[in-house]
Length: 514
Ligand SMILES: Nc1ncnc2c1ncn2[C@@H]1O[C@H](COP(=O)(O)OP(=O)(O)OP(=O)(O)O)[C@@H](O)[C@H]1O
Ligand SMILES: [Mg+2]
Image (cartoon, rainbow, N blue to C red):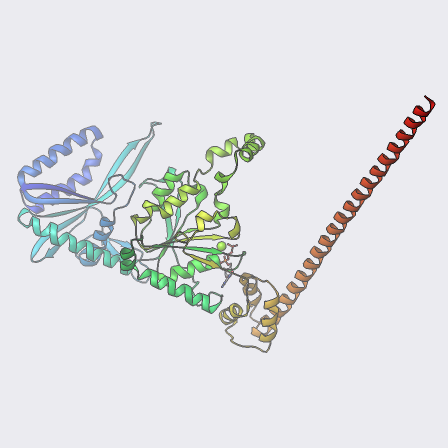
């Protein structure tokens, strides 16, 4: 946020001193008097000073979004001028080996650009608010002020500020620590609380090298990702927002979540893990997605479980029946339940809103791809459908290399055959391969895997046999029932026939007597 106030007459040092004194002490003046005083304070400075003063606030006007310019300026000042400040703040850095120093609150530094001196002040203001229930809350607002002589106004606004923002952005990219975000409930969407998203540093070790899957498929995905990340101009040329959708589907433990981490590590993107069930409605969803940055992956895990996304396709009759059944039970829960709809989700990921930030990958994961509404996963929305499947030999080789550091073994042939015949998830294979004590070497682990897969195969055979038996029994029962019904029908018809002929006999006897 950028605010300009022109101040005439007194020196920049005096202005700075006034500004700092005002920022520190104004918080002790009652609010209604403070706002009046503030007006006169700035008017007075304006009459007296030759200096221009520009304010960059930490949050944008709506107060809900953090200002990127503020962060760029902070980066710039930390790197270029903080060393000259007398009071510094030490922040944790990416690798925690070295400290990142920045200006402390109410501190001042000087910078020189094209031979022109400017001053930066870091300010802190405490703001008191009163809720509808009369409770007082206070929060802090930070801002930087840039002060310079008015004769350099054009140069500073046109060149210096652009230079600071560009440099600060580049420093931010260099020092950037990858983050994993999760969405907060909307009651916490205020700068003095957690904002829309909370984050933690993201250091998941999974990479494409450690991901066990068909090597050709893996290469295709990597190429697709590289093409996407370099595709800024291409997407602009073809008139598409710079985003790409991936649908990862497959049974549990086949590496869908692991793949997300691998993509994040591969492209150096942040991850926004969107928990749809805590999003109240479509408009909340839009705001959340608008508050995500570029170079990021927005993930909705287990999309089939997140929402009743096909609910709106039910017939009226079905809806009525369901409503009757669970009306009372759900009434209370319903008030808290998310009202995000399929069309709301589609609009947010694919509509006009999706073009508001660049370089974004949207990933859905599911165990049941058939359950999903076709509208949700059509190409263009989910451009790349990736099936994560059971562990076959190629995937096993990656796991054996990762977990046991071996590339061959005399039992590889058996394992190849067994894994083709048995459906075992990479998660189960990985767990079996992992040494459980220092005494266990690769040989022990490989033998354990052969045993486990054989047991699984036997189990699967028994289950299949049992299923076959049940099916045959059901078929037999159905056949018997059909035969019984046919027999019964036959008997009834014969009975009817006998009855009919008896009645006819009686009638002719009667007629004869007459
Ligand atoms: N393809 C794989 N390559 C490497 N490790 C894997 C793979 N699949 C599973 N694993 C291992 O199994 C664990 C569970 O895998 P992951 O959470 O990625 O499965 P998932 O497909 O997301 O399962 P779910 O459907 O239950 O969410 C991982 O931590 C990882 O160690
Ligand atoms: Mg998962």
